[in-house]
Image (tube, rainbow, N blue to C red; front, side, top):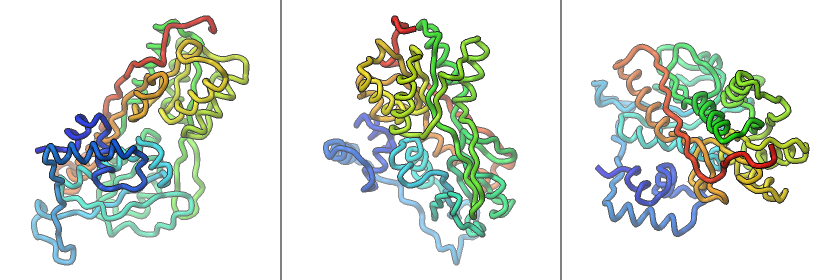
Length: 351
């Protein structure tokens, strides 16, 4: 059977991009040429979307095997953040694509912030939580016996299924790679993680796993310098401001670990504005491997995170728990692959 993955490989775009084009997502920023290419390849391959089986919830089938479960997605990000950061959109489309293969129906998408008014989630057969949302809040508003799947790099959740990427190992690999290139003064640019709460509860911040791992690894190597760590807003604007601050400090590391590709795009802009060159003056390497990473100037070295697959795995996990095929919680850790391009080079003169 032809899948979106087949189309994505032939069109040289992500699966999430294919999904959004085929579903006529008006918020997707993509060229008309790419949009038409995806439609043409889908037609050429005779792609046929899998339709979700319909059920009457007032008259549900008697057997578990044929019942369609209504689930909700709880997102810790706004619609703007999801639209501008392919990591979150890829997870969501992975969930939705896999749900079409299973008796699961995403009947509601709930975006959680401190003002979100949630009193009862019992109408749903299961929840998939994307990002940092306080688990105690969720537990107070959802029946204990129903499954909750967390897709998060942010918090440890005991007693529930968790899907995450091995960002700790990936961060260590990045540092090892940069040191092998001769870099010993390595900086970090990233954001903090906000844990959202329901019903006016006060959100709180925690350190991102990439930052924690960077600090631990660099301290173990005797190379850690706290004034080379810059934390601010996620996204291109945040990356731009943080890199500009680093440059203006007059004590610039020869390499940077940057926590996301969108932040790296902003950092690149700041570097170019300062008449510095990548990788001749500064080597940078980031996380996500978004579609644009390979087409930047220079092409961006990055860590590929299998966000779409994380979404699919979360849907599978929920179905297993909902149908009783598995009763113990699991932590599913997907690999994170280091993609070497042209934004890193051996240490130059500015060490």
